[in-house]
Image 1 (spheres, rainbow, N blue to C red):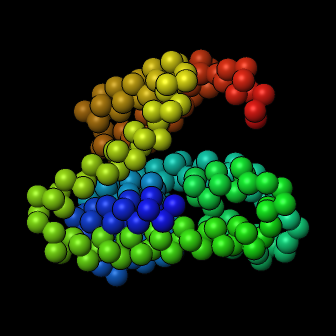
Image 2: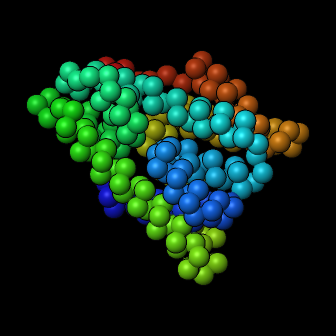
Length: 217
């Protein structure tokens, strides 16, 4: 996980600098937000002139999955106080969720999860710090090329699901087409939000889990 978090954190740090954030702001965002994909999307939108309302709403929609992930983690973790649960909820990411929920029941302890999120959190903040520094040292052409990191991250998250479900792949393409069309008539940030909501509604109707996936849930 360290080797996964630090490179993406570096890419985020460079993107944030390119978007106009100061070094301290770049690192503080990782310290207080700790949400890689949302941070990268937020700085990308900020760099393109999106308003704060649009950025907040877009990142909220992207992070709604944490409601489900946090619920699963809290149900599996051994009994502990509300204070610890609040701290643990802050550290829930896709990676920590995947590792913790696939561990044996005997290891599903508060201390195991605390150690897990300490590694992910420290790695992400370290990567962000290195990225903020690297943005001032790397050649401009190399820094600019790392701007595709956000798109690469989302494609990497999307491909496994698309390979297993044709309807999901069609929904992804439909969302891109709707977003492109709406961008011609309304600001791109709101086009992103509106296309996401509209196509998510469409997906509820015709994208379904297969029998095997339903049994796993």
